[in-house]
Image 1 (cartoon, one colour):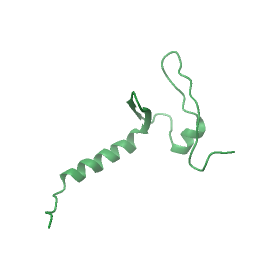
Image 2 (tube, helix red, strand yellow):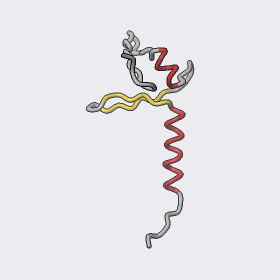
Image 3 (tube, rainbow, N blue to C red):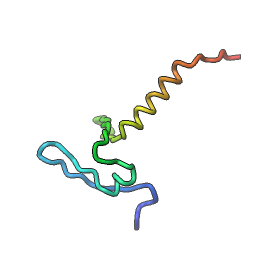
Image 4 (spheres, one colour):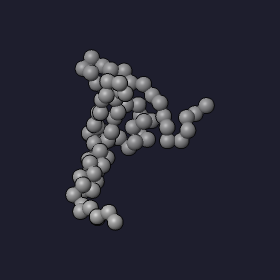
Length: 75
């Protein structure tokens, strides 16, 4: 049975230099191309998350922008 649309699972073997290869179907799903920068977020208890660097940068920019907006007083 295939996975639901938009969801995939794959494995990656760690090479001698600590490098991994992201499976092609997962790269295609997320539009990851050669030369793209990926951010790795690690938590010993929860594992590793891989995030496109430009997506993370956009998220951080929106958070910082929201923090610099004046707040409206509560009524």
